[in-house]
Length: 376
Image 1 (cartoon, rainbow, N blue to C red):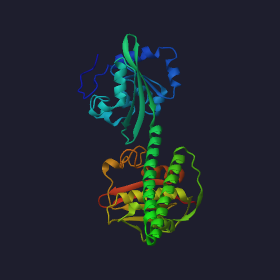
Image 2 (image 1 turned 135 degrees about the vertical axis):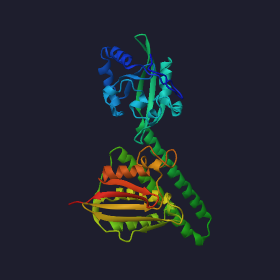
Image 3 (image 1 turned 30 degrees about the horizontal axis):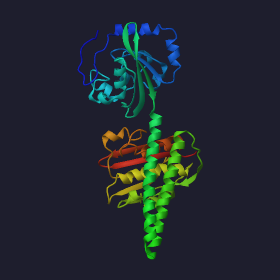
Image 4 (image 1 turned 180 degrees about the vertical axis):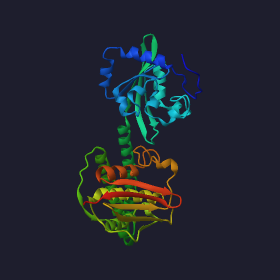
């Protein structure tokens, strides 16, 4: 039945020969209306044989897979969607130690064992992104053989919304706690200290308002509901304002922010509020990556048909982080944290029409930049 035996750390690795796979496929495709019925379903529908190989896939899989339709026969689900672990062992999808905790593999195995199953999983992709799936599996006996009827639902948007909410409530609760503490301090402070504490109260309140605005802005951007209001800005003056604002931010404590001496003052038509968010996130990330006593530098330069604004810090981005840094599902700050770099890319490119990127090295540090087009 199988071509040869392969080692595995979880599910069986053996596969059917090509001839037997094609025979199974022909039998299933002969079922009246099978193809048109399931091609009309928006979620991915798979029929897997006892070796967890695809013998039927509907058209929706094309949205998740880099493979051509005819190349999907015989692949396993992780191989079809480019799971990074599916290509690390000769046995492929389901045979690595990481597969032991994969909800997709667990659901498929349950379905082949005669049980209905519903699981969630996060699949790390070869391109550095990740895919959140809900996988259901139902036992299917056909032509005397055991199959698993599987439905894969992409829940990445739902997971991302949860992450946005988690970030927002985490930040707003921190600010509310600080505000409550300052209010209590203000009520007990001697008269001479009240003005200083009142100023701190205003600063924290302004930060809460800013966090609420950021959440509203990012949610609108995600839903393609953001309206752009362009106006001329002077780049050097804009960066000076940004520096002055963030010198009072908690992330700048014991760190220095400076403007590059040769920064050019160029007029560019753009949305001031969105550019403030993009550069502000670059600056906050740079400050968080900078050791006490070190300096973050901002600058701008004029190029052919464009202006570049940049933020530099002395540290280097680790190699494992570089390919994932703009991904919506990636964070270096723990679960539900670190959407700053994702929003930089989203706002800077989709809405401002610029190009966002970065360079990093141990010798030269890290520079994040946005290049905005200049009108002719």
